[in-house]
Image 1 (cartoon, rainbow, N blue to C red):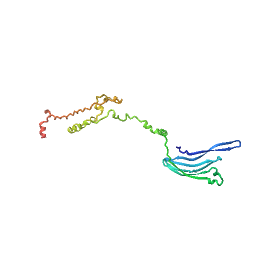
Image 2 (tube, one colour):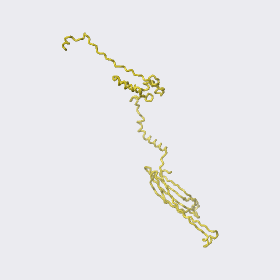
Image 3 (cartoon, helix red, strand yellow):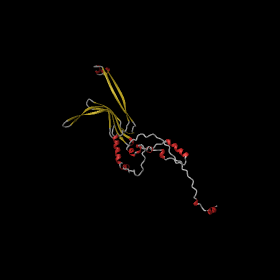
Image 4 (cartoon, rainbow, N blue to C red):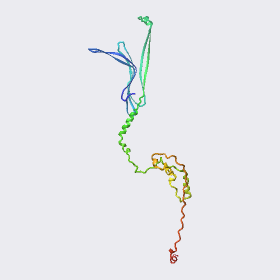
Length: 282
């Protein structure tokens, strides 16, 4: 894990120490320095737009030793490259080959040390090993934590507060629009038992108008006006539960028949027209 633009270093190996002597006119100083051997990987990532990662990769494979005189000896194989990858895509680096030659000598004591003759009593074996190191890198962009997201949201909110001033300071529209019915505490329910009466009344008595809509869709306060819970608006406003409503009792509406119109009375004799007028009309 590394921060954007910083170098990350991984080493798998050993450190060989040796002395370094520094001599001046007045004193002599010795300090210890270390020779790092093994596998060393250096990575420097740079994140660009659209989660693309530009990486500078430098793998190194080295082997060394300290001579009898205290001098370091090192053999190094390294590769340095720069690649650009998408988040979650990988790359493979190979070619880091390491070869070792190991010489093993066995001999007969005393006889193997005789000049010219000692070779007949000696045995040498050279073992050569060859290894290749392959490095696979898959970079991934780690998002920031929730704290950073909260701070960013707060910055956006502070930057857009002036835009929210209108919705926050709303005008009271109580006097500008009618009050809506209280659908939660005074709901309206369809009375299916009264629907057939509507069609029956219309069929048999065409001159009779149907009952108002509140008869078929009554509210609780209209259907049960004598129940205190449904009758009091104050009880509904403070959230008092009026309890279960009484059972629905259907009352047959009283429909008055149309009134019979009496024929007009005959005219009075004193207002009758004269005989001459009647003959003239005949």
